[in-house]
Image 1: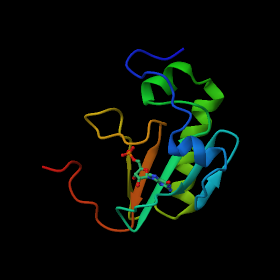
Image 2: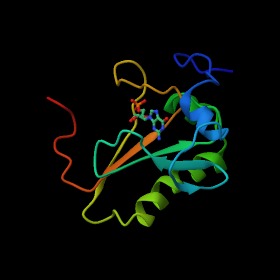
Image 3: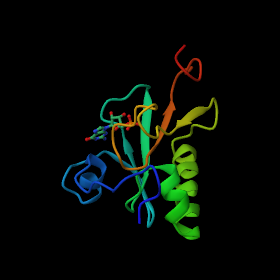
Length: 125
Ligand code: 5GP
């Protein structure tokens, strides 16, 4: 059942197709709950996307419907990717675009991980 404001999950979205193996990706990490892969149009020297494997559109949707193990698995996957890529120093940025005002293009929840240079101000001014 969709959470208010998130609509129906669209099984034709590009990340659903990547999860089904219909479209290739440059995989960084995979476990029971999560998949991480390089963004096709990187906006930093390192630009990785981490997604839950199940059908969630937004943070609201995920936090309302996902089970405890699934939430823990996804959060741990984000941390593990950052550690595995050696990004703790000098640091990295996590970002999730949710909905129209944030410019979310792909309606499957994803966390962007940016690194590899100074990333500038948090938001464009
Ligand atoms: P959003 O704007 O929804 O937060 O970010 C969607 C991201 O998905 C963009 O950074 C875009 O470059 C990336 N993307 C879109 N299509 C593909 C694809 O087919 N493969 C990969 N690896 N990334 C994609």
